[in-house]
Amino acid sequence: MTNWPKSYPLALLIALMALLPVGVLFSLAQDSAQLFDTHNLRVLANTVSLVVLTIIGSVLIGVPLAFLTAYVQMPFKRFWLILLAAPLALPSYIGAFAMYFSFGTGGEIENVLGISTPPISGLWGSALVMSLYTYPFVMMTTRSSLLSLDASLVNAARTLGLTLGASLWRVVLPRVVNSVAAGALLAALYALSDFGTPAIMGFDTFTRVIFVEYNAFGLSQAAMLSLQLMVIVGLILFIESRISGAQERPGKHLSLFPARWQRNLMLLATMPVVFMAIVLPLAIFTLWLVREGTGGFELSYAWNSAHASFIAAIVAVLLAIPVAHAAIAGKAGRFMERITYFGFGVPGIVMGTALVYVGLQLPALYQTLSLLVMAYVLRFIPLAVGSVRSTAENIDSGLVKAARVLGASPREAFMRITLPLTLRGMIAGAALVFLEAMRELPATLMLGPTGFETLATYMWRVYEAGYFGRAAVPGLLLVLLSGVGLILMLSGERKAQFTVTEDDRS
Image 1: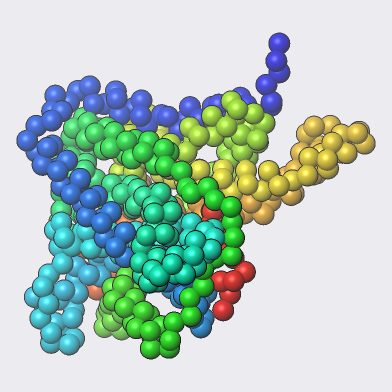
Image 2 (image 1 turned 45 degrees about the horizontal axis):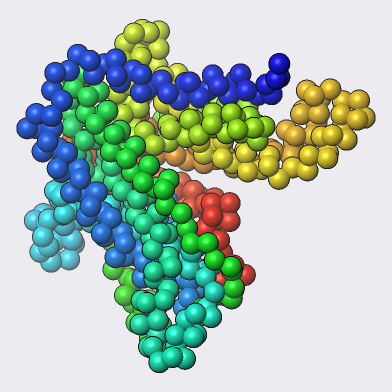
């Protein structure tokens, strides 16, 4: 009889927990008779339209910026990479909040500058915000692929008479099309799962309508809509799994040295993106802070965010340890690990719908911090698992074997060798879970205890009440936290398969 590794039973239990929301949703949806009525079809059309426009926008912005950051040699190149990747770390509802109240009649741009601007709302407003905050997915995946390509084919094409533009179009772009598609699908997943942006922009997508149904005590219909949304998410995840990057022998990548005026023109072309995605939100929130101060904001909101997120981070890391070690131990463990990743693909609004029902069946959990922490853990445990596993895989197995030869028990070898060496990965994973939980909006709105306000939910409350100026402090704090998250992501760029070579240093 084959002995399973000791990590398998715990890993299996955690994997089954990750599947809990799906079973709950199926149970709830049985009471809903409305599968594809006219309203559902309209919501489906809206959601698909938003996803398609987001893909188009993210590709049109992300691919040129990938070429710029990968191939064009410029001063402070690392700074430009960080600046252009910054929207990846910001929650899109920050941008939606700023743009909705900046443009249009009576917007902040008209109030401050006296310039009339069209409103940003509905489908086109949502698509604009989504494109601005998802293009880094395309930029980074494409850039990674570009840096792995050998420049010899481009040089050969130039020798045969093709212009630089034609060489990039006909030789380079076809070789990175899979990476572009992979980034575009990540952008599509973000657009599908985001709640804040379409809600603020007043556009009915699955996430917004699910929240409306929940507020109207229509849990069954909310569950049915959630399952329909998850079918689309599952389809995109399947397509993404079928896409593989270019497999080429690495070589010296292409380096372009344009004239100063050309380089300045390229950088100038990026300014509208930087302004809309980063400068405008910072400026608007700072304006509100100067104008209205910190009125209405309480430090308890920040404490609530940090408290719940810290507990979720600790729990996620503790659960990630057996899952990560099971994944290293064998194929069955890797399958269990893949199941835990399912939670990361479940939109927060869907997770909230499922766990609300769990809370109703278990009154001791309903509207408690424990249920909210459970949602955070189920959603973001893959971040902790990936970080712990990548660190544990790099441990020299000879160290553990030597400890066992010297008489250490398996538990002692784990506590004295494996655990200390994986501590860095555990801390990094906990930090990522903490930051993501701090920014989570829909699950917190649905599962937070009565009177429990976080930075994200306080922003939502002031939006609903029309006191948008009071969003200054939580907005700026969330931007600051997102900056910390960006530093973590870029410092782990190699592990995330966004390779930065030594030539990227300015």
